[in-house]
Image (cartoon, rainbow, N blue to C red):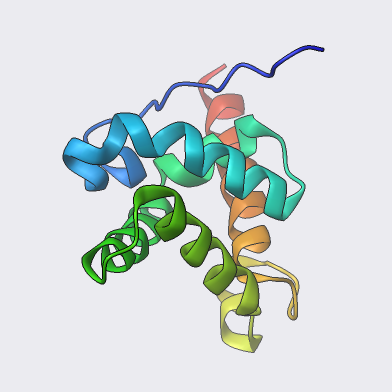
Length: 124
C-alpha cells in the first residue's frame, strides 16, 4: 500500500495556510485530503486551490465552523460539504469560465489548477 505525499503549501503567508494561522500545520493535510476526495481532483490541483485567494475564503469558512465548536476535521468536512452543495451560477461561469452547474468546490479547484499551470507556462 502506497501513501500519496501531501504537497506543501507554496503560499504560507496567504491562501488557506496563511489564513489558518496557528491551525495551519494540522489543517493542511486534512484539507488537502478532504478536498481531493470530494472533488476527485489530484493533490497538486488542490494545492493550487488552497494556495489561492479562493483557498483563503475556504479557510474563512473552516474557521467559522471552528468558532461554533467544531474541531479541525469536522470544520473542514463541513466546509467541503457546503462548497460542494453550491453550484456554479451563470455569472460565475461567465467571470471564470467554469461550466455552469458544476459543484463550486470542484469548479474552483479545476480553475486554480488551470490558472496555476498557465502561470508556470508563461514563466518557462
